[in-house]
Image 1 (cartoon, one colour):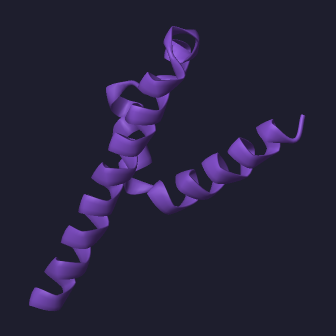
Image 2 (cartoon, one colour):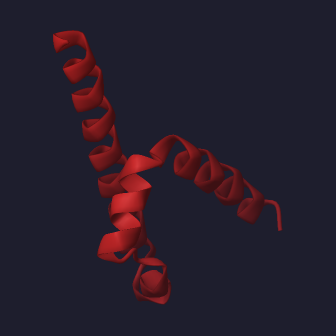
Length: 67
């Protein structure tokens, strides 16, 4: 039972860290990218589904450099 709690805690903390990094990236990009900020509901979903969200973000981020 304690191992399961540890895994859940690590998963949630990683989701929070990914949300923080996304927010810092949006802040770094400037006022032109303010429309990309997430709402509270989107942040919650992003935090739960962060592996999928992070993968899609990285793919689109790399694609944007090749345009």
